[in-house]
Length: 161
Image 1 (cartoon, rainbow, N blue to C red):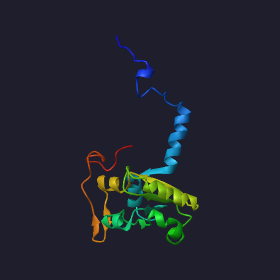
Image 2 (image 1 turned 90 degrees about the horizontal axis):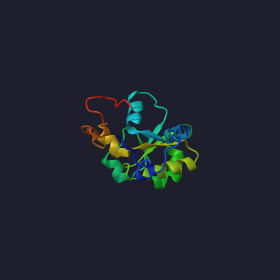
Image 3 (image 1 turned 180 degrees about the vertical axis):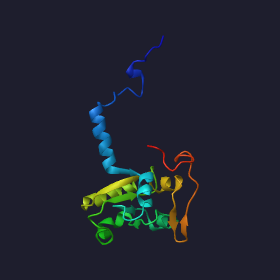
Image 4 (image 1 turned 120 degrees about the vertical axis):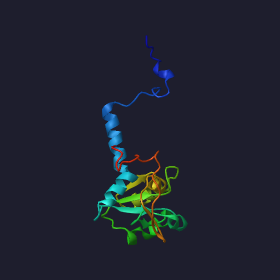
């Protein structure tokens, strides 16, 4: 005989899941604000104009350690002063910073949105860009590390999600 624990004893169900319509609205909204590194890499790999600008909001020292090829470098502290000179206001901007433990891309996205730019944040940041095996650029040229099997599908170009 299978027994079911009361929801109050189950930490996952202590707060009941949202109604399906509410969950759909929430997850749709999340996709409005976020893109992941795999989707950004895929769009950039198609060649031509991807329809968005990638913006690295880290310091110059961090930029020099490596960045997404073709990204615009604009540290968050300089966005208000320089965004108008470096970015096309009609083009959506995808911001990134170090990684999931850093909210720099979120702060950059906020600064840009407050200036009237359409913006998304690239989840995972530069850390996951590199960990998933995508090429990155330094002053020495392009580099690539082997994909981390915990972040990218082994032997496949696409995770299927």
